[in-house]
Amino acid sequence: MTDRPIEDYAVIGDTCTTALVARDGSIDWLCWPCHDSPAVFLRLLDAEKGGACDILLDSLRETRRRYRPGTTILETTFVTATGRLTLTDVMPLHPLDAVPDEGPDGLPHGRILRLAACETGTVTGRFRVRPTFDYARDGAVLVPEAGGTVLCRRLSAPEGVRVAASVPLTITGDRVEAAFALRAGEGATLVLAHREDDDGAVDQAEASLSATERYWEEWSGRCTYDGPHRDAVLRSALVLKLLTHAPSGGIIAAATTSLPEAVPGTRNFDYRYVWMRDASFTVTAFVNLGYLREAAEFLRFLRNADHSRGRDLKLMYGITGCVPEEEILDHLRGWRGVAPVRIGNAASGQHQYDIYGEFLVALHAFLDAVDYDPPVKVNDHLAEVLGHLTDHVIRCRHAPDHGIWELRDETRQILHTKGMLWVALDRAVQIAQAIDVASPERVAEWRRIAAEIRAEYHEKGWNSQVGAYTQAYGSDDLDAAILRTVLFGAFDARSPRVAATLEAVSAGLGDGDLIYRYRNADGFEHPEATFAACAFWRVGCLALAGRTQEAEPLFARLLARGNDLGLFAEEIDAGTGEQRGNVPQGFTHMAIINHAVRLDRARRHGQARTDEPCPWAAGA
Image 1 (cartoon, one colour):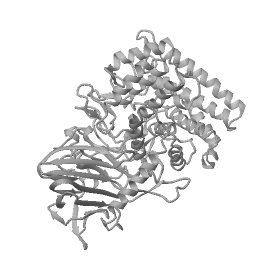
Image 2 (cartoon, one colour):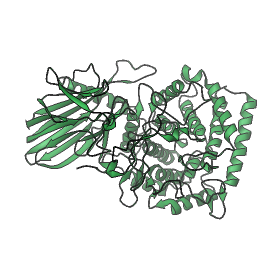
Image 3 (tube, helix red, strand yellow):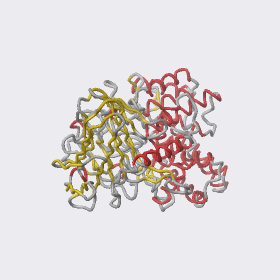
Image 4 (cartoon, helix red, strand yellow):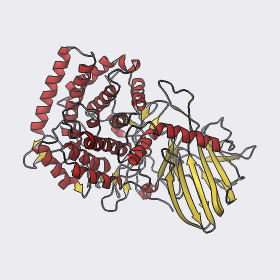
């Protein structure tokens, strides 16, 4: 089968990169060695030209799959006419003897292990490996090596994938194959190795699998959430951990590029970069679950990526450098033929001023979680960073921008941005009250300007004809992003105007439980699907308004929209229920975590006021 549904995919990874594994065991997406490296397998975006590593079994009848509890280790069970086989897929990540204060907390091996074990009867089949380097723009030479391995070497660059197996390998055209005939209790192992010095030895595969399982179980064991949705929350946390880049501390938005947000349409973008907004969301989610080290690691990433200490904060960053210019790969047909396939991202040059609020929310949540006693490297330049960010807010408070949705037409006075500018100054004041990082005069100025900004957007953002707060000053367009500003306290969740806005958004942008971001023209020809995170924001607004009896069943229904493994892409087609957009999407999984925590604490402690500085109300 080709052009599989997006929800057919599972994700594995090693905190350097990820791979997507289809329901039938085919690895259809892999960028090595990093998340944003050129793809080696990309059947996901072109069923014919894109390479893959698949498994073919004789007389296959059914499949089922699961993750080993508390891990990212994927098990797919195949039932054939003659027996049953379980395939275990893992990217090795071993525990360290001592975890350093900064840097990776595990040892990735740059490998994929595929362990097939026959459980009953007999099973015959074969693995197939077909790399297509540099997004299928470069050829491969398959070179047999001493010891039975095969090196798949890129034609025009010193890059390759070494293939090894516990059964003999053969070369058939542009593929490496490993055939097996197994009886109950027997197994076959395939190893894909990216590092040049890795000989591909398979004899340590089981030990490596056990070490990786131990790493993930220990990591999952530190999750502090123990509410009724623990499985969904922990799976989302594991997804966010996979979207980190441990060597740098960066957090990417999603694992893929160019999975379409609309069918038909051209809303296909590359999300394998570090968006300030998305990464900050993820930081709050980590803090809410007790993963303070992951939050601190993102601050390390920013410290190294932004040497200006906030003076020149960017909308997005590459994992190890600048975001490349947007480029269309017109030799690829795209998922289900929905082109274009893009790499790079043109939005990196946009003006999006809400990012100052996003970052200060994350910084405040982290500082609050460590009782305002941060590591020395965070504290050293905190006053300077805070000063630069608040200066940005004050300078751009009256300027139009492209906003959270990265609208590619004109800039506007977007209400969500204005709300987040107030949030930025509010959190700066809270930080300064706890740590001596600004003079009383400076803090008083932040308070005064924050009050002015808040008064302005309350007045200019309300549209009496629509009966709601709208997308921009003077606009009639509804925008689900307004719900986020409520979650951060920029609006009172219990006010009549917010209640009216929630009803207007539900009626005008809703489709059952799902919510569209907006419906106004945005420069693209076809409308997109519903935005998954927006539906979870509605849960949060209901909870903050004291309507938990509505919020809790809505949250449960939304969780059921994930695939069989609890994974979410960016969007959901309201008509078919199919997932749309890049996958797995950190934005969605962050929302799952934060709203599960919000509901749980509301249930335990009663409803907190939106102006109370409590960490559980800080996440979106």
